[in-house]
Length: 307
Image 1 (cartoon, helix red, strand yellow):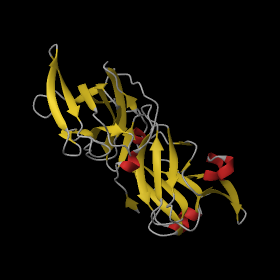
Image 2 (cartoon, rainbow, N blue to C red):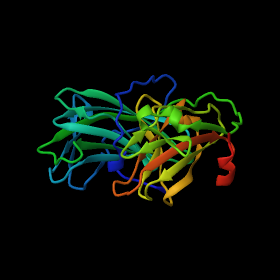
Image 3 (cartoon, one colour):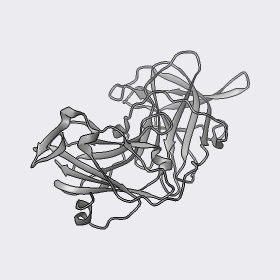
């Protein structure tokens, strides 16, 4: 199964979240003194200015291609935590704030800028191991070249939420028929079994995620329409929809996809499954069941027997 890093595949929308700051650990602040971000497309003009003693960054877009803006690499962080980035923004046009970590993204809804500062916060759950998140502010809509757009940034800060208090509990395999977690219109009977039929895009209802410190394996029985299908896990931990993992199947037809070593720190209390079949595929994608467990199940024959 092949992971897919793509800015255009990152367009995951959510409501603007709000986070408690008590107990959070500040891990990064942008002073705009030495490293005022990096032009995303390479042609944006970045200028550090001062407003009554408070430095801010002005970003002037050249207006030559879509998705122009600025990016800020955040220093390496420990995984299995919830990262929250805050900022103030103002200017003209429509701005898309987003964070990339691994090959998945969190993106807020488009922010319509004005001459008044607006405070925003972006959550990003971090997977296992050392993580190197990148913060982006880019022009929207994604297929429109910005015309004369200028925006400003101030008070950029990243913090880690306190670790969750979780037990170290083993989780036996539990099977979730996806037909029971999907819109009724998407369910059809095939060979006497209810499965989910997917012709364009699909998002499941929420599946409960085990609240344990043990790493969790999610196995998904999926009939691929094409090896170009995209299958993802998402969460709303932190109040904004964000991608956790994304894969492509290795072959067409029925198979078990493995999303390994997920954590409750990443997923929160619930996850969803999202699928985007290839538009060029001649057959329909199908979704049967998900299995969540702390056990590593070595083969598809064993997975088929989980009740």
